[in-house]
Image 1: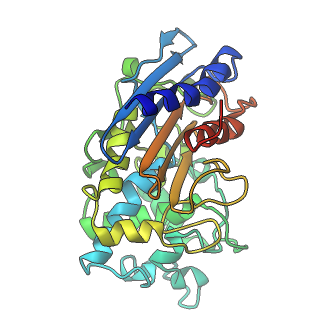
Image 2 (image 1 turned 180 degrees about the horizontal axis):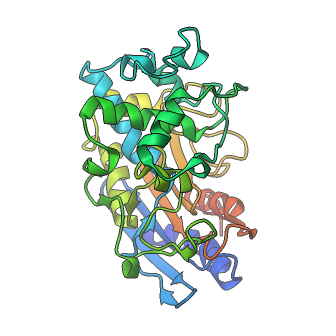
Image 3 (image 1 turned 135 degrees about the vertical axis):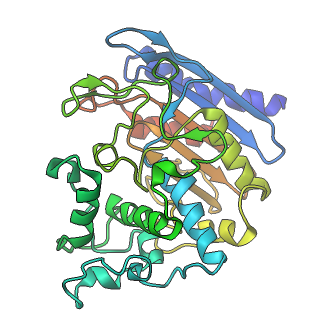
Length: 336
């Protein structure tokens, strides 16, 4: 435990420096090992405008794209393991109306596994929310749109469609589903890290989802999950010790699908968010709001860095990329 405490103190310094330099308002760092030993510490402010509040260990965060790996990926993998779907089946097995007016459309050939690994031609980002605020209309729009095809890239559309599949297979909307132990689809504003002063919703967002497409869809598979550092570490520990998912699902989360991706997760590559010293047996993911989680199975430890780096605006160089890598390198053995 003393070794973990010393490691934590060193890893916390880049976060403290970023807050002191006013690059980010505040953050929470947490580390856990496979024996369940953990340390969590907060620094800075959870909100600056219109009022200032301190960051706390218990602060809730909009986890953004961590939703993809904490919520959507495990549920898709579990459905496949239970035989309810097949990862190599086309999405139309759950959503036969996908591009239903063109039987030859490429979108109808996309599989669950391709979406999990971001191996589809969908565009990286699409401002679906600009087409309206009716969630049913937007779902129909996404399903029937003739999408422009390109080279495979990391795309929210992949996980929006996986979220639709979960809704169809369960008969529930995403927000009517159990978010999981320690997680929720919203949080009390006074207990949450603020995100952006939103130009679309005309208010500082706090306790409600930042992602515009998720907001307009009123729940989606790519974003929308809220949690604390403790709940994120609980999830990570469950993967480390095998209590949080089946052996098969955990194995698939580690199986490479490309040079940078596994089923749902990222894997180490040059310049990735976890730093240069991660073992090959590491998976991780980040969220646009300033969140991240990395799990090193070979070394038996995981760490989460949760920040409100887009508060009050995303249009500022927060240095989050270098901060994540600096923390990861110290966690994995570099000197402070």
